[in-house]
Image 1 (cartoon, rainbow, N blue to C red):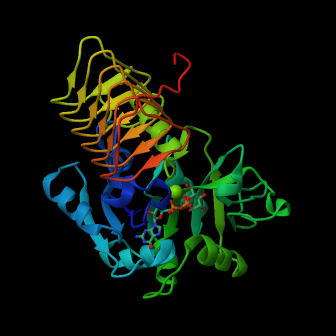
Image 2: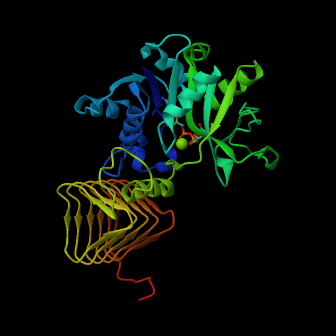
Image 3: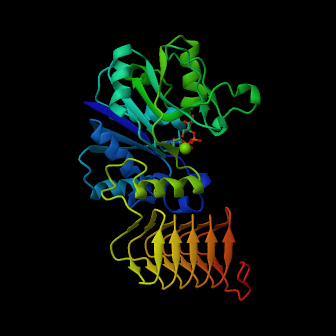
Length: 358
Ligand code: GDD
Ligand code: MG
């Protein structure tokens, strides 16, 4: 039996204001909280018990696991104060039942991937490694942890969020999943903040521990930013990203109780939440519309996220924006490229048309 720890305690700062009320892994993606995609993938790879390492808004996870049966044992470990990624792993240890040499899987809670999870564990066990890291190549590695390896897969360094061009020594990044020998987790100091990336991995390398990287180039995405969040949702709905929780991939996902006018268009992998309303002639493409949101007549919403209960007035144009829960955008407003509207904000209607048909 393999056990796993899912790190879900971060504040999701880059996804504000969506994460003001809901922690990032609990945001709905393709019809279910994002964390369900990860948990069901782990379950299908043979993981039997998963510890949710929570901190920020831990109560939202507790409520969720009370009502749900995903065919896997789920327990919650809540830090009183956020302990960082390494501190969270150490804190979750109390809930693990495995022996000292057994493999323990660790997942970052915001990564969507096609990783061969059981293959990673098998490689870890076969090579007798202390830690095995899932690595993936990316075009621009600067926002991640860089992990150069030698020809045998031995990790040479761990460079978290490099700040100088000299540090860009590889395009292989830490893809947010590790296998630890349980006894190695025991060596992480307890009761204080520890970054697994900045402290634990460099210290293991210095001490000569066997740390290996396994490169897997299948689908990979960190959903930490609004653009990535929309892309991940789109890729799941369209079936481009693998998840056992997406039963019928297609051009759009419309959840129960949503009312879509006959003349409205929903496409590009959009997902429309429960009891949302899409008025006549509106066009929603490649977007995520949360529960109870309303998209007014003739509005155009592309590559955007519309929070729960938000109202988008008629004729609005939204391209690549985030509208917080319960916000209200008056008729004919145009918002573009990274604009964020905070929950509950009301923008008045405008009669000025900015778009080309003005
Ligand atoms: N329980 C707990 N406590 N979880 C935490 C804490 C904490 O104090 N801090 C962060 N986490 C969780 C977050 O919820 C997230 O799931 C995960 O740890 C990683 O944090 P992010 O904030 O998403 O980090 P990142 O995306 O900047 O970088 C990390 O992921 C990259 C891959 O996506 C690093 O691990 C990089 O090295 C890596 O390349
Ligand atoms: Mg992240």
